[in-house]
Amino acid sequence: MREQVCLYMCPYARFQSAMFDSDTLIVAYHPERGEPRGSRRCGTDLQQAGLGDCIDCNVCVQVCPTGIDIRKGLQYECIACSACIDGCNEIMDKMNYPRGLIDYTTENAALGNPQRILRPRVMVYAAILLILCGSVLTNLLQRIPLELDVIRDRNTLYRETREGLIENVYKLKILNMDEQAHRYMLTADGIDGLKLVLDEPVIEVRAGTVQQFIARIQADEFNLEDRSVSISFHLQAADANHLQTSEEARFVGPGKN
Ligand code: SF4
Ligand code: SF4
Image (tube, rainbow, N blue to C red; front, top):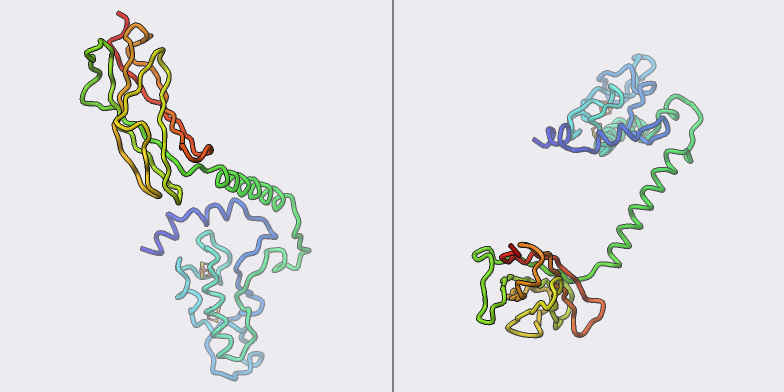
């Protein structure tokens, strides 16, 4: 299953192939050193036996999470985890051969071509990364540890109060994600003469908790332009100016016709 996830679900390998060039660091087997491969006893004279450094033990294939044989060259399934490098280095140590039969290299280095570190591709990727990091940092710095959720009561569309006003009921949730308790004040606008009715004028929410409460909005039917009108709830902490947020909702009434 793990192998199937690596092969078909992980986007790393697909991204990797799209971003590749000849100077990208890759995990590679060195055939000029390893071939001809074959088993041998410890201490065998390689020149006499006509063998390379690869003892064909298959450790590099067994440890590979995607089950590929890196000796066949670079394959898109390779996730550059370097497990084959470690596995092969252990074998090289046991055989008293130099390490690095499989190691990190680039296509140009393997072919003996000149290598470039600073190239347009690297600069473009670095710029994109910088922009992404910058926007994440800005978002983190501007993050307000407060959220307001408004859900209109769906049981009744609206009702008429004794004073003849149209009333909608909303269930509100305040999420205080700050490390200290705050007292919040709620206001609403969007309809002329709109009236907000709350059980408590100031809502206290403990640190890291969610507080639910009911809010009623009443409006004169003559001030409703349509059957459904957009209104806004505004939440403001009484003890911290920067803690404020707004949320849109719909107010439903009988309409003008
Ligand atoms: S680095 Fe080696 S072990 Fe890891 S996926 Fe690539 S070939 Fe397999
Ligand atoms: S682990 Fe090293 S020595 Fe063993 S088969 Fe792989 S490349 Fe050859």
